[in-house]
Image 1 (cartoon, rainbow, N blue to C red):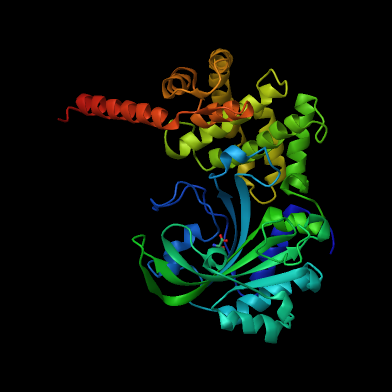
Image 2 (cartoon, rainbow, N blue to C red):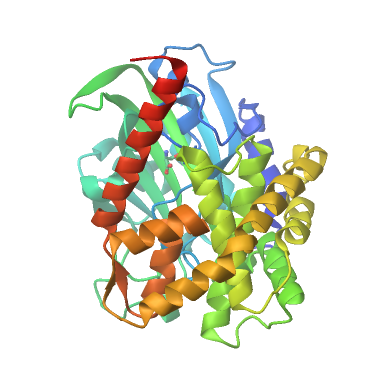
Length: 437
Ligand code: SER
């Protein structure tokens, strides 16, 4: 395996699949186009659902992309572990009714073992337990010994994300070695420990999840593959987690430079450094795709990210606005794959610094109030959390974050109830001003 930068890996993958007859497309926007089931694009296939269902004719029936993705279910964990992040890139090769398992599996293997020269014995495929066809390809065509092909159930090897195209899948795991393992003699892909890292998912997309618990057969069989670029870079660069990958590490180092802190010396400081690094990446790409901080939907996700980053900056002693400086490094590290970031630099700087400034006006007051309230211990009331949100601009997850550092929690139901009332009031006053009854 040869050390390769994240930017070169992206290029290597896309040009490999171009040579296999795929059309290379730019990443789609993070903002879904006409898809109400998603707030933000969260996988390579998400912007292409209509090509899979046949509703829209794709520009070619073989396409390859590197897609910007955001996943937020673990937003509050980001920083606390080195495994969680919100922003990542997903490499994918897609077939819309063209090739199927017989090509997708051997190409995945060829890319990993010949192009990237990953030693074959470190790769473990998994297949859906009822998929004898994929199993046979791995065993008979590729020649993987049976003991290294793992059969897993629906939970692990049937891919679906909300409504739309889905199907059984075959994943490829990389063995990171015993030092990451749990020591159990049954440890293999599917185990909860860190030894086997899933790097590639080949979905044999043949069903449509209708969203009401039913599935229909798609008109044609498709391939939807997804490989996390940062994860692949971890393997190729021999590093532990995505924060150590070359381009991400440069951003992390910039956070250290701005704060004057050293990474890896203090557990709590590391949490903040990682959270800021991830959130600066996510915010930069969200703004470049036209998202503006607000109190709803995508805009609220962006607001949470910027405010969380800003607060973690304070925690590690950064007393001045710093995000607009940091995003210059994000742009620099990503401009090879996303040259548009460079053109939108001024806009991104402006949006991020406005949000940081408006938060910094109230953050100190809000923090003082919260620390007073925390002296009582226990659970923070919904009313107090709502006041922090409404008057001091504290997104609820920020309040939760601060409380959880002290082992406390918040009455979220009470908070949500007050949010609902506020939304209803806003709606009725809008209606009144529009003259509606
Ligand atoms: N859709 C699958 C995933 O996100 C493969 O691209 O893992």
